[in-house]
Image 1 (cartoon, each protein chain N blue to C red):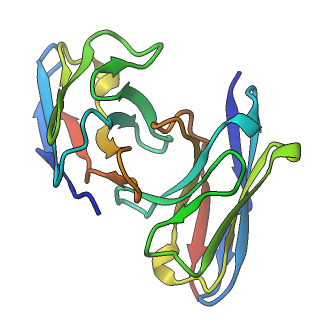
Image 2: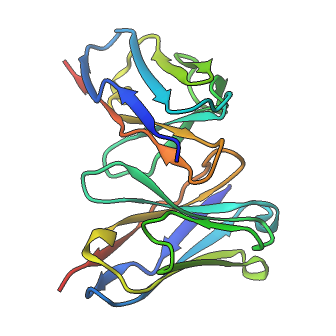
Length: 107
Length: 116
């Protein structure tokens, strides 16, 4: 199985801050990497697919990059509604696997 | 509007069974692969099962293999998860999600609680 390692597991940031979350995979997955946002009590929501493609309707302050085994999700200017948990997920191989999540909290 | 709505969750004793349903609308269901993903209370996301658009290709997580069965009825635009021999550790919110090399959209989830 492909192991997913997200870092950090949590972070505190202020509105307007630039935030970067990283995801490392145990083997190369090309660009088969997706990012999701989950607010408390809600279903996850797709933000970024195939490493860098912005899902329709998602604000442009979200961006993704990377290929192979190292990926990043960047929020260029954190907004109040962005405080949530973020997950990476690989779609290269079954079983599909998720990172453990990064909780973004208000400083 | 593309929508997925899960149902069938509830409280069940260890060793019991439950059948979850996911009703799809707003898209041609028979054209899409589907998945089940779960989330234990306070924990992260865990992929459970995949089924191809025709229902021919199926995959399971090792944690549920031999106990859970995924199926679909394309005529009814519905996805199912039959869960047998349930364990306390199967307690979770279960989501269905449309595939396409990415999970989108997701349903709102249905809570399964396994407890005596």
